[in-house]
Image (cartoon, rainbow, N blue to C red; front, side):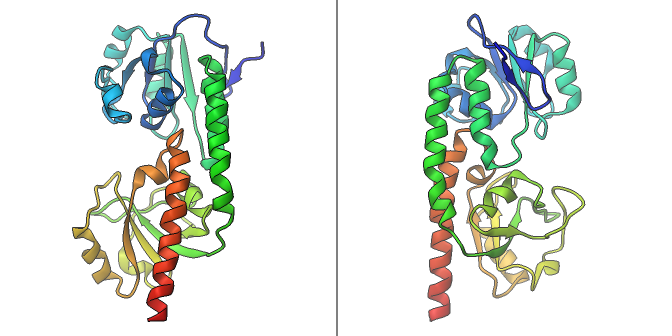
Length: 271
């Protein structure tokens, strides 16, 4: 059997016995549960919170960037799942010294989700469940392709300093499916800091994400004062930034969110 190739080119064979999985990626922890693998989870990070009730009994091994390696070792996993963006290379290399299989993931955009479903479904004997998720994902795409409105958006992820996302991110590619192009168009880093005033005249809309900074209603007026006349709204960051099975709900969420934004804009202009 040819096996399944992860993001760094390592081939993983399908499991031959019951696996013990430690997931260090919140969205993938959720995906594993949706693949029917919750009973195989031996550990997770403190940021792995969905599905909440299912994960209560799964031990925490630190955060995505500060993994307790000795705790992981004590859990004796057969597989650990990491992500290039969310976990450090040093952590992955340290894990490889005592974990039989370290699976590296790196989805760069929403269209990378079906291959991710098939990678994990294939390794862990959940091929049928993976194909079901692929079908659900494909069913959500026609609505995306129906969108033609192009807007320039400032997607804020942090405050003090204000930070946004470059177009070389999963978030930006998710929004681009709906014609929303993130600003700035060119950035030397993936998560640039900026002054709100610098975006005046360059953006049609500002989105305040619910994560990683917990933007709330009280922050809307602050941004509106800095950028008068530009619509400013809150957006569910999990629906935009989480890949895995959450991306299916994310596509549907953004379908409604962007449609509502267009209707609101048309209504305001009509008045």
